[in-house]
Structures are given as C-alpha cells and as structure tokens.
Length: 279
Image (cartoon, rainbow, N blue to C red):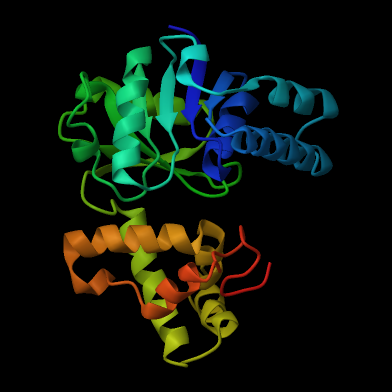
C-alpha cells in the first residue's frame, strides 16, 4: 500500500484536497481528462502555496516541494494501484459519480471516498465490488483553510474504513464529524436551508444581500453570511444540492426562482465573477 492518494477531478475542490495532503508530505495524483482542468489544478496548488509563503506559513523551499508532490494525469491508467486513499471530486451528478467510482475501484485503494455534499453514499455504492471500503469525505471550500471534514457512513461502510478515514483527516490536521447517510448529511442540509431562505428574502425585497449577510455575521456571529457563502460555493452547486434535497424532503428545499434564473444566465458566484456580489 503506497503512501499516495489519488484525486479524481482537478477543479477547485480536487485541487484543494490535493494541496492539503501534499502539504503533509504525501504524493498526490490528480486525474482529470481535460487539459485545461489539469493546468488549472496545478495553478491553484501553486497559488495557494505561494500565498502560504506570503503569510509566513511556508518557506519558499517548502512551497516548491508541495507543488512537486502533486502530479496531474489524464486517466487512471497512469496511476499506481493500491493508494492509501482514492477520492472523487467530480461535479455533483449521480450518474457521473457512479461511473468514475466504478472505474476507480479497479485501483484497489485502501479507502475509496466521495466528496459529495448531498448524494447518498449507500446509493453510490450499489455497484461497487467492496462497498465496505467506500465512505463519504465531504471537504469544505476553500479546503486549505476550512478545518472541517464531514465523514459520511454508508449502510455497508465497515468500521475499519471509518477509523482509517478519521486517521486520514488527522494526517491533514483537520477536524471531523461523523454522520449517517441521510440526504444532505448534516452540513449541507443546514447550510442549504439557510442559504435558500436568504435567497427568498432577496427575492422578496426584505433587504439587500449585504444587509442579510450582515445580520447573520454580526447578529449570529457567522464568519460569513449565507449569500456570500453561496457565491463562494457556486450557485450552480447550491442549485444541484437543493434539487437533490427537494427529492428527499419535499417543498421546503424547493429552489427559489431567483436562484434558477441566476444560474441560467451564468451568474454562478465567485467563479464567474458575479453572483449576489461582484467578485
């Protein structure tokens, strides 16, 4: 069993996961079929490492070593088998996740994980040969600074897999919570409920986005308001999660028309430059 991890998907979350493990000395293979995705992943890793140098958290030599530990690959065939962890961080689409996980299990990782924020772990594991080794590891954006990992236990997840996953979280010096496999788990179910209500308040003209956020930041001591957080997560991501939760829990998670309209016109938040705030 190698002391390497594999990340499927080189987007913001995948790059963040790669960075935090590389920071602790592990080799990381990031697999992304898109050349632009692979290039973007390396840019993110190098940028975050450079920012750490500016803040005094790393020296220039350490920053270079972190970047060197991350290798990008076009497909799984280029990756060494039996990694310590293989985690998928592809978009929040059930069919896509099932497809990549079915391919990934051929590498026989000690822990096979998904970074899903809302999709059932048990349902994703239905076609896996070893569902006992499969688990949810829900990281939060930005991965390099957010201290939480939500560990989600499926119906067939083995106790040994849960313990191994907790050890992986300890390696990257983050905190974990362990939750059962209910749609939305703990964090997304609560966070999306607050975010959707804030969007409804904007739509109803209750207050500006900035003032709604200020109410939660100052009145309830949230480090970031629900609308700025929605921008950071991505409005398209929030919409996808809301639709998944609507199927599970009904109309209380029905996405507001304002959210649907903003996604349709490409106002996705920070990644597009415009959401509830300009970035």
